[in-house]
Amino acid sequence: PIAPTAEIVASARAWGTGVGAFNVILIEHAHAVIEGARDAGLPAILQISENAVRYHGGDIAGIARASLAAAAAAPVPVAVHLDHATDLRLVRAAVAEGIGSVMFDASALAHDANVAATTDAADWCRERGVWVEAELGEVGGKDGVHAPGARTDPEAAAAFVAATGVDALAVAVGSSHAMRTKTTVLDLDLIAALRAAVPVPLVLHGASGVPEPHMAEAVASGITKVNIATQLNIAFTGALRTALDADPDVVDPRRYLAPARAAVATEVARLVRTLDDVPGG
Ligand code: G3H
Ligand code: ZN
Image (spheres, rainbow, N blue to C red):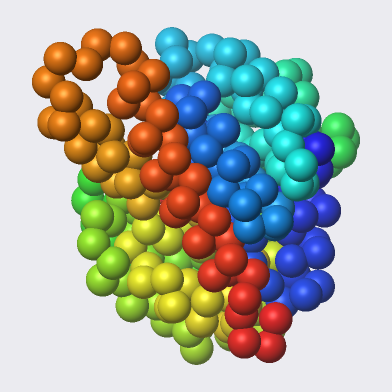
């Protein structure tokens, strides 16, 4: 069934476990994530980014409705979340489609402008019962330029959450978006300090670059929501390429998309188990 992100994240936090939030570009991703979560018997979050919406011609309706329908039919709790929205119009469109949680990302703005824009978005969301995540201390790599050096200061994070009223906070702790190699070293002491200073769940972006045992350490140190996109794209595209190479005459997309979808499901099942099976969790 569809479950609110608020509930999935709150129960993970209460248990000291992590929850995977997986980016959906195509309907195959939504089905694959749900298949993986079902195989593991664990909840998952489907997330649709502003970039993915742009790919779909700027209209969120199609991919949102497909994701919500798949989540509703899932045998495990599945949430649908809007990821990295920079435009409040997209937030409104997502909520109009029935999406109950959003990440409003004003982290590219200067600090005070980030606070002001995030407060506006969070106020709008709170009035409608929409769970909102924001970001402080920009996690790099969104523009293809890796910046794993950014760090979120715990005191600044506590002040940001108090000023904006957000429900969750994306923090810069050593990761960077769109990494194709698992070479990220997270600052676990900083995660623990942020966990102690900030009253809302912490979100790790750019988790594809993080070795899987290290993801579990990040959760044990205080991360709750773990965002993973590139790792699924690597699995999807790898399986698709293998299928195309194996049969140069293939033309039916189902012949090469089915193995790609299955490869993503396998990744997701392993990832959600890793995030759930945390020392002390
Ligand atoms: O918001 C999405 C994520 O932060 C995913 O990052 O592609 O590096 O896993 P990634
Ligand atoms: Zn991200």
